[in-house]
Image 1: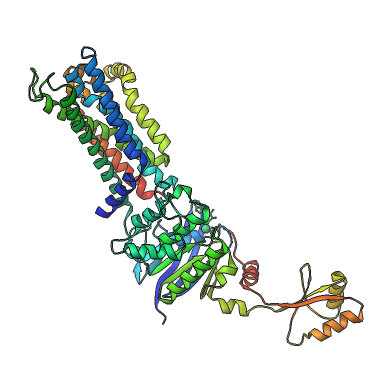
Image 2: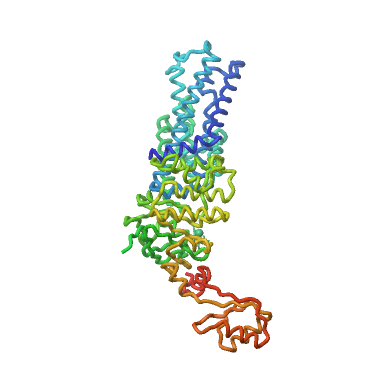
Length: 257
Length: 303
Ligand SMILES: Nc1ncnc2c1ncn2[C@@H]1O[C@H](COP(=O)(O)OP(=O)(O)OP(=O)(O)O)[C@@H](O)[C@H]1O
Ligand SMILES: [Mg+2]
């Protein structure tokens, strides 16, 4: 299994897009930091820091693309046979891909947290203090880390679905499209969803509602819309992620190549 | 009894309601080069995929070195290297990176470069595979099948896209490895090339085995032919068959040579009737002719 994960990482780091994504992320974060520095009234520095200078939507975008392609490329390039006719089993192959993507997403979050820290030192050394609470429950630093963790949970809810779709359709285009539309459509359909949930309360258990977990963690008042507690959202997200991954596992095992 | 490395017994496979393989049985002796031939869609690639544990099959047994291989038992595939249909290649990796990626821990850089040299891939192996031509990709696919020094090598149409020189190089490599004890199962439509390599032959038609044995036995059932070119082939054919010669249907004049067929008699007969002879030759049935005859006469029905 270690060998398989190593092979997946070898492929990942030899793709240009892997490095391009990291560079783009850092450039965009720097851009936001500069804007926040110049117009602190519009872009509150502390709030920007706590959102890792808007890194999260980009991490979603890059991870959705990477997860779709780690599966779909094997079908597209015809390399799936080569992967499967070795001494390894199908289950091991798909799990090695998941592990690789988990590592890659952890890398992105650590990179964003570390670079946010650097940006804070460069642009906002006197503006706010990381070890202050400013009336909140946790320090600014702890708050940022916790928020990243909630985002990580929500990201994996989407990624598990993207991995499943890439397996079903063998096409990264379909998986990426649905993943990205799903993520960005959330803000659009949020109000509609809220109305529907009010009408049929059982709808609160739908996976799209679970995507509100990070937002509700930041602003607990969202509970009036999601009708679920923050912990219920966390558990719901994890359960849906597990369900999607299990389905993917069996789809991949049964696939004819 | 010979040392068997691969054994396929009673293998059947359906795709939907279509029976693609029916009760296929054959075995491969260690160190032999075995040809797997048959028309398009006969099931050659399907057999190879089944051996490689790529799908489950409703009935049959496959074993390598006496141990079973199936979709759920892959352990023996450690000893196998393969190229199926077309090589799977990552466009963003170089040839060398492919070989590094798929080589086992024990394989050294020198051993990888040795295969690169033998396949004459040195000039482009460090370039990204996106820029490779068809034949370059094919060579890389073959190199990937060989890189872990497998005991059994399965090659599906390996000559696909190779130039004459590369074909010859491949033949040299295969023969050399076979001498050292590597076993090969090779499918190909280029029978003239295959003929130079193989010890044994498995012929499959519409999912069923129609011949299994050595190549010599298939070709010895051959008929020798005397081929004539004359000024008037039609008249010559008529005349010869009137005189008791057996004529084969063809554009030129082809007489089946029997023990008492003598060229002098044929020439005399034709010249006595003022038919000018331009050329005379004998042909032996090659693998292609024998095979075509075999496939024409087998009684396998589509199901
Ligand atoms: N995935 C599949 N789904 C349905 N039918 C298939 C599938 N793969 C192969 N077949 C059918 O199985 C039969 C055998 O195919 P196979 O690829 O083994 O032929 P082949 O002997 O390798 O032919 P060729 O010389 O053209 O490579 C064909 O009739 C083909 O249509
Ligand atoms: Mg084939």
